[in-house]
Picture 1 (cartoon, one colour):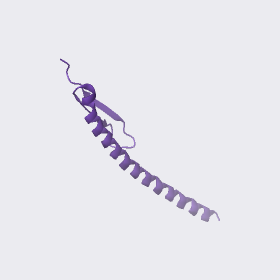
Picture 2: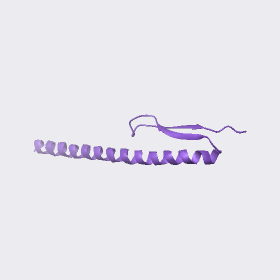
Picture 3: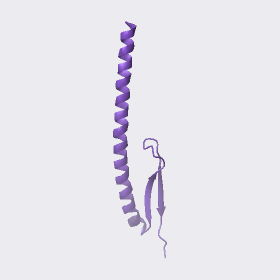
Picture 4: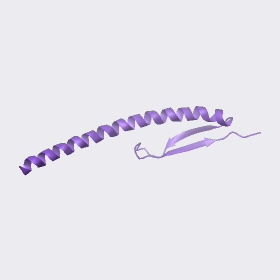
Length: 79
């Protein structure tokens, strides 16, 4: 009886771990696609808002699920 319950628990755990890995993969793909789109738009919009200059976003880590986002910009000189 206990062996059967243990086997069922181990199977459920394996199923859960598999689901978590799948969700992580999908989350990484969607995050990267969205980040790249936002970064591209930010680079295009920044000079329009500030009359020149340039900007970009950069992830602070290779691990997309743990990374922060750094914002870099250079404002054009005003004359």
